[in-house]
Length: 93
Image (cartoon, rainbow, N blue to C red; front, side, top):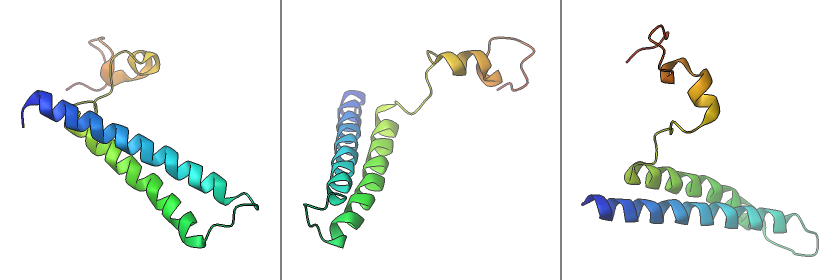
């Protein structure tokens, strides 16, 4: 698969995973309302949807190349010894 195609498919999977997670959370919140009588299967499906959405998002991130932690995160750049530019860092690759 070419890089551009992999990026598009990966971003699509990430988007689908996020939509599935948000929809599943909405179903779980609506399940708690007493006015809406939902079967117990809907609650279990909502919980499973969160995990499936997270897996889709992670698969899409892996495919599109977004799985690495970026250097722009402030805490990571300053306090993680593996990412500091100091030569005396504890972890060296």
